[in-house]
Image 1: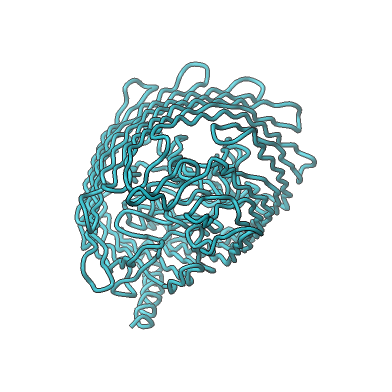
Image 2 (image 1 turned 90 degrees about the vertical axis):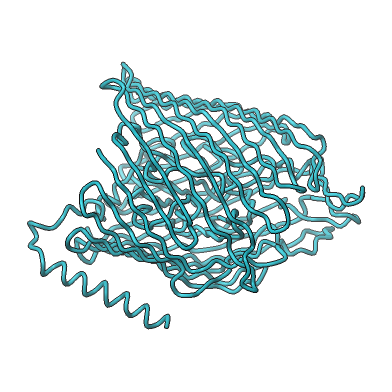
Length: 632
């Protein structure tokens, strides 16, 4: 059956392409700007250097997911959209949790991956990682997602160890008019979104939005429901002003509430709100200034397990200046204060309340040695409530062979600072402590070596390759003493290769493919009594292969496919799987988009992540219909 379906897909693509060539002369072909490989190569990224640069020129392993990619994939959650990124492992654990990782260390609370939304960190200092079910950006308003694979601590600080995911929404000036979207399906029971944007003055714009979703529960092994239905509501807005003197100001904010079902008790309840303000100004002589401040408040209650309310206050600034004709300096600093309030449950923290302060400064210089060779050096210094002063230095070099071809290499140091889970944790039953954190828990450390190449031999083909070797010290271990105490008595390394490429066989057809092969090795250090084999820290596949196809058909139809093959998980031994998602889209008018999506088409259901749970969750085949109406 699977082989037959694959043949049908390939034949459909080939026949549709041939039909497209026959049925319309070149002058009548619809605007295929969104399928232009040349334009994809010119996309600017800002995460690596905190300044715009062409992705193809960036001396790092960089992936970009555009808003158009997400529209054609047909998903409505950020976590699912990240499957489109090269060399990013995305695995659903249950009805509300994902394990998302780059370069190893997949876990539901991945503490080595920093995630930001418009400059606001959504990394939790209680457990580490991201509660993905609580991040519900209206995806039509998303400009792009930038992913840096590899350490980026020099600019973004602790926890940017294995990578950074930077989610960037559109300027309000680009979202004028009305947008209404509705989705219904076999698992995504309902998704309703609305947004309105307009000018305030000729130099200022705003938008307001609201979105709500309901997802059905995955299944248990016996086919019964796991009772993990998920419901989320979010609303917010954004204002953008073009100020005098080539300056720009943005103020935006969101509010959300959510519930995730549990099989044996009442629902998980979440709620959050934030306000972010960003000011940027271009100065004379190639200088620029940026200030970012935000306030973020979150609440999360898992009945009979954990309860936390957390407030974060953050302020950061950066200044870019031309030191010499061949040298550009970026420097800055900031401070953050997080107030965490908990109360005793099964998982408790001592003390109940804790304020975590963080102060940092960074400097990075890009030096043009020759016309083709440039070197970037810098470091970040940081001090937190849980760590003494730490340095995270890095050096990168790139050699540009020609306009769209380069090779690059880097050596970096990064740290993962302790969380309250590492320091303050207490898990006890009948007044007996079973697992506890330790005041002696220190930062985990990484030394990373990586290199790569990126080139475009023709206007219709682009390719890139990167390799990495990461050495980790002082990783978290679970020491039997006789109860479990968290310590730093694990070490390890990861080694891997990442490949990706684009081919545009026809102006109507774009194909992208990527492959990751990696090996994660963890081992206890002398004196350790940890017998877990790092199961709770890293459960990664040895390989991931993905391929996606975008095809524009005549009469405003679109046919898109996304195939993925994921290997067996290292620690749990969960078998690998391969799946196919497809979408048929139709735009009867310029304002209307109708899509029919099929997901997990090759199997009735499959499990993606074990996560140490007592029972696996199985995710079923899905069919969904989406209708979007939008005015400009």
